[in-house]
Length: 110
Image (cartoon, rainbow, N blue to C red; front, side, top):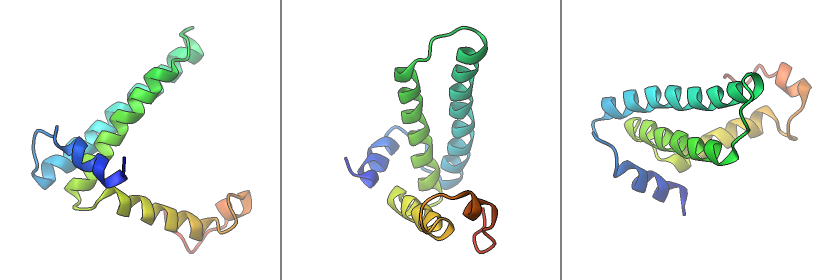
């Protein structure tokens, strides 16, 4: 599946296509889903739960849905978002990750 096809298919389940609704739903949904991921890890580390790979994969899918929603609200496709991120990473880490580049990167903003 192509990235933008995923976005198109995911958005068929959005309950609103108004930009502001998509932005707010995307942001709040990302907060909720990342909280679910963190909660699972917390339960594994401190409450004796088994690490559930399948659960985390499902949560990643939910995170993707909210990213697609937020991007649509911003009127951008996922391929553009991902390309911009890779361009930023290439500039920040031209030879792959290094601690030196991570600490001293004045030309790139977060």
